[in-house]
Length: 224
Image (cartoon, rainbow, N blue to C red; front, side):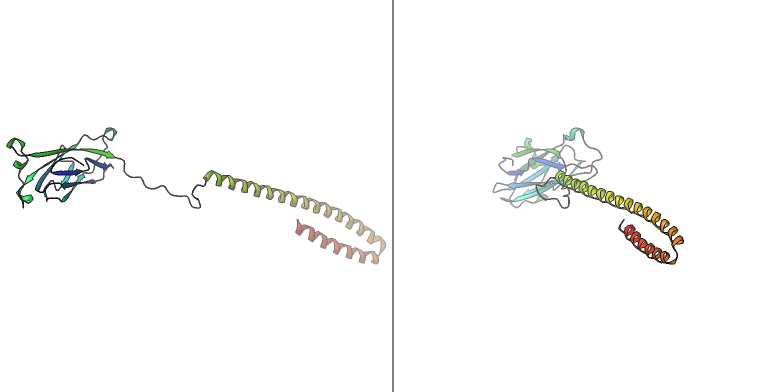
């Protein structure tokens, strides 16, 4: 805050969160520290770039007044985000009961013998506030994402190993079933030949054995 006898000014720097093609505003608060009516006037080195509302006014004794400074949308950023624009706030005593209509340029003329306080304000460009980063679902405070990835990787390796072992076991059982199938076919062929030689009794026995072989083959193939 400035140390003038009439007005306290807060802040002494006009900070604009600079963004291209966007109109940006910031505020000043003027505090009348005296028991007099105080007139003020705001000037800038670049009046086409800024809009000040109000740019003149009266601050009542022991009261405050807010001033809004709006920077017009800019098409390009200045080099190194440095701004050379400046503001000058002038203040002077006014008659009791004065209003904005009573303010004249002569009130701020030092050469005419008027007591005028002046405070220079500089413009500062700051980075716009960044949005909060999204929080990953399922993450807990203090937990390490890499740890979670490692645990998931270990689980996948274990599942792959188990699946590989199961496939190997089923393949082995299938090969065994095929071998049993070939062996049973050979035995069936042998029994068929003996049936032709031995007559009906052997043929009946042949039918029973063929039925049993079919049941065994069905069971082995289903298991495979």
